[in-house]
Length: 410
Image (cartoon, rainbow, N blue to C red; front, top):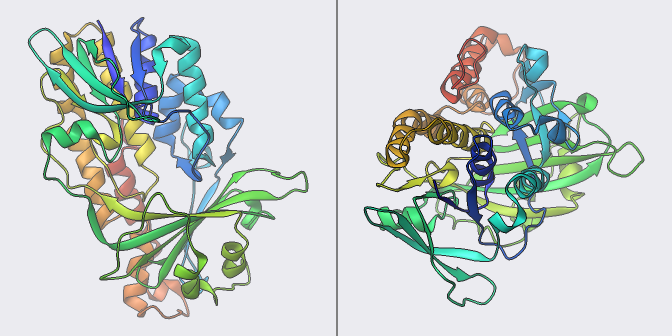
């Protein structure tokens, strides 16, 4: 069996490593000229770390990550709304980890090089198109750095894990647009003393009044006991232009919303203004589609189901995609039939997560409280909403996403 993965993404590399467990070598073609540790923070929930554990990578990830122990929800005034234990402390077999996205990618990349051989992980290859016939599929590339045409590559099947702006997906959905609803985001990292014990994931405010998500990603980053803190702000601004992934974030574009956010447990304004770097992103996804597999070609990860970065679910769903497809191919199913079976197994579940991230993500808790209080401080949270109702919102999301404690393996 000859397999090409278009895109050295979390999904593409996880697939390649998973296939190697079955003795199948998958060639990975990545667009960037050189693999670097880029980006800011990412959270891996227990159903994500379960998948990476199955690839033999959990120890390596834990060595470069912080294990989250508790999640806390606050309103815009810093008042505690709800909290719950996370990861192993909540009874899961696997941890919840916060780390630099670039370090996650580096762990996967090195593992893929070691297991498949460096010759099978090819960079500087930007996929232009794919086509197929009864006997196989062909991927066409250009050199990213120069734009020069490169030789086409032939295989039995082509797996497209080339992200939200997938060139392969565009062939099958040429008129599709990114779904942007006026929510822009900015992400930054700041060096400072641990917040709330240094193992806490925090959601503060809502997109209507300004929201910030905060969690640590590197311990003792400078030898003085400071952590590297990842934060992301989200603001709904109707009629604004969509942020650009390729630009550095500008403090003046969003800081006025947060400049008076100073609580007894955290000075949010100082956290933001002291950032080492700030990047801007749009809050975008794509409408769920009814087909990922087209004969000998299928979509994987963000190319299949781009979703809002809420609920920390993008990496998890990509890793589950990769494991599902690797198992079907590795257990001897005919390749085209395996691609079809993969779509049947994963498309409905992933589409439900896309919809949940739009309508009822975990921070719907914050939105609900804002709605009931008019965005004002409360005297007692129990007079606004019961803890049972808040817990139900959290558990409902976990069930849809595939990591409720009472849910079997996805």
